[in-house]
Image 1 (cartoon, rainbow, N blue to C red):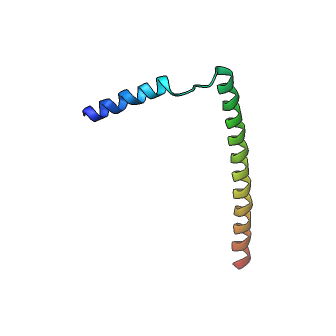
Image 2: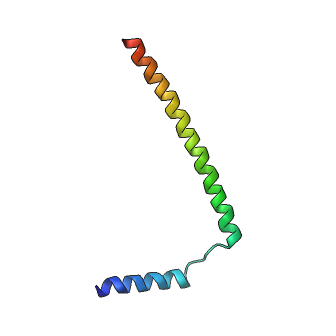
Image 3: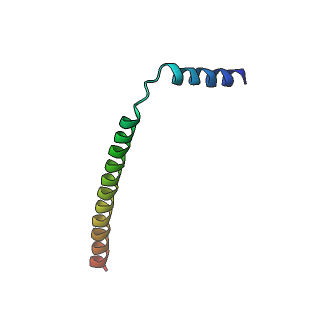
Length: 64
């Protein structure tokens, strides 16, 4: 149990003293960038899934 408490203490110290936190404006900008790329990636996955679904459906209709 002492090892766990030591781990938490050192982790908190690391976050407090050694991590460079972004400014509020930079955090907002990066959040928007991540959201935009996530939406683009989701739309790309949806498009590929739709195309493959159509191809597979056409294939199975063709082999009936």
